[in-house]
Length: 334
Length: 289
Image 1 (cartoon, one colour):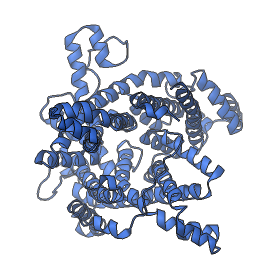
Image 2: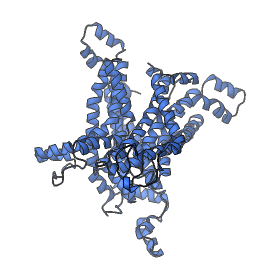
Image 3: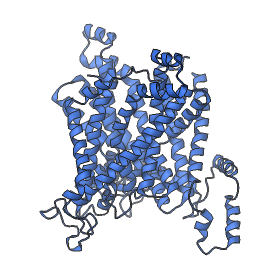
Image 4: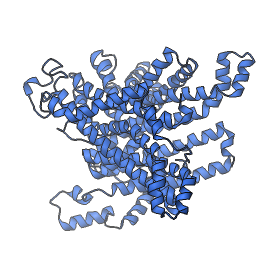
């Protein structure tokens, strides 16, 4: 197990260097001159030269990259051109919002998707199965930014059951401990505040859960169907075990690895979807921050956000990979 | 993320089997939707009741009625006409973005798999790094670098879809490379380039083409997503994603502006997914039911 983990960690370092290069090089393909952008059209040539030297953009690109990498290792990802805050600080303030949304969606998608997948596999070929498979086809094809808008129109604009967006009602601010509205409200010990926080998360979390929910249902169904064909399952049935026991003890165990993999792999989809969901529901997460920064040409924040989210994504994928090594000891054997 | 790319060892796929897959009921519905979509792009200028850019402030935000079947937007432009014209930009997205991913990704995979060695290592490490990004994040930084526009968003979506094609193509190439007919071609003195283009490529191409079909729907959604965020098609162009962004601004008072363009995107994606699923089931015997 230990050599396997060491090998994966070594790979991780190379992937992170690769990711930082892609982000850095892409952001430096920018047409135009940042110094000109900052100083405006009437800047003098000397002022431009001085600012370029100050920003370090008069150096060759590899020197700039090494400086950027050295800064990144110290947690310095540049300064926002808009707010003058360190760019990483802006990202760290927004991240808990994205994290809460992503975790809520993943929980919804797994808690509904896995049982639904098992039921459709057990009742394979019934009307229930056909109806659910049609629904999941719709689910994977759904542009979530449209689905979110439709939910918003129905439940917020027409029925008025939920708020139209934002994290908390105006004037209600939980203490800033984790930065996530629901845990912070729980820590504040105010039930009205907890309910308000959850109420604001319902539509965004369901919207973001749509596509992963459909995928998890489909994969669970396929894996349970495949695992039911194994000999030991037939033996278990022959011994007279109840259907539920066979499914839970003998089938699901064998189907667990692919299901865990798929749940883990949803993270990329969720982080991507979060950008759109945060825009629809006016949530101040990293996705929204990056889009706003692109529109206002605040490149250090875009770069910091991209690097931060990519690093989180790579780390979570590693954890998912290591988790199968725990579920299936064969993986670590050479 | 994984260091070693998987080698796909699927047997060569017969084109006839793929045609048979398209005759299943699900695939037929999909093909019908795709055909309808193509018809829409061709006939948009004849069947659209209004010019998609014509503003008529007297009917601004008017709900669906006999004169505007799908209602009118904030400038009184006819939503139906804008959706019909918007199908053209969706088709361009599919052809260019999906084509870019297929051709460049496929070429990278073919070269990497066929030449092997250092070229293979470099290309596949690049692919691994690109796959290490959540897809929309990579598109965001490419658009940030190039500037928001429909063309740049199409390029971004093309680039983020390349790695999957490269990986699949490389796996196919590795699988067919040792087939007897390849050795036969080599032994009669065919040049390496000829072997690659005339023997390896045609025999490893089908799965990659199926993947391009499956991705046709998702490139439409991804590009519309960028336009929805304001990073793709810019106003006043009638693009489905940009129409949804308009609808987002008026969702409390005018539900129709967002509802109908989204339905159009959804149907096109369902169509391509139905066709793609049928083809994929045919390719993967484990999933054949």
